[in-house]
Image (tube, rainbow, N blue to C red):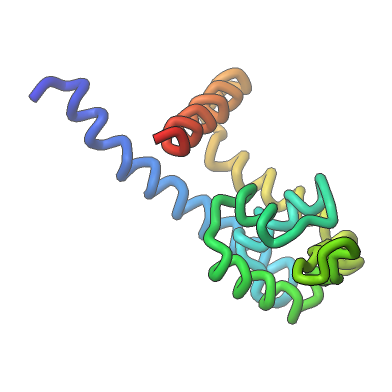
Length: 148
């Protein structure tokens, strides 16, 4: 086996290890700052809701690449600790719209600082252009997976 093939074989485990480590560190820091369990998954969902809200559960599932059942459980937990609220979609009573609460909006600047600091520490050896390129490449990998 040539060296490049070995690099390809190592890629999935390195991506997984990095993702798990970053996710764990973000969760640890956000939980410490929020004073209650606050997972990286909550942050990923809120980050989308801060950009565009309200969103349906289907829209959030697509944006976060999560199945609806696990997303539903996560949203229920977020609702319990006052991070999101649900309202009925006015044009389709079967759908619920999800929005960040005032609690989440107030915590947003601190959460952004925490996430930037955690990810910044992980990428401290990378130049800004490398971070941009890494983000572009990971996006391309994700797109390729979705095309398959």
